[in-house]
Image (cartoon, rainbow, N blue to C red; front, top):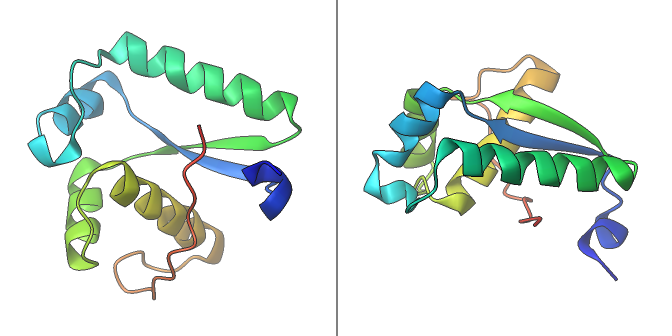
Length: 115
């Protein structure tokens, strides 16, 4: 079974970075992003969106505030690597859906990495 079959994902929140926020993220060694240009990031995101849309999954682009993400990740014991960014993205989507403040809502890490 694929991950999507196991968890019946119908909506996928995906971090969305502007050229400026991408450069800001890449400037942090903790983010572990090496030699990835903004056009490479966009091509990868577009591929993921096309793949997931073809599978019937609605993709929601979540604009990322880098300083908020760093603050949230460190508060909850995450680095700002791919795992921390994924958990932050899921928490951000949950906060948006429920109207809660992301910094004070409880965290339950149920994220999965999808390539």
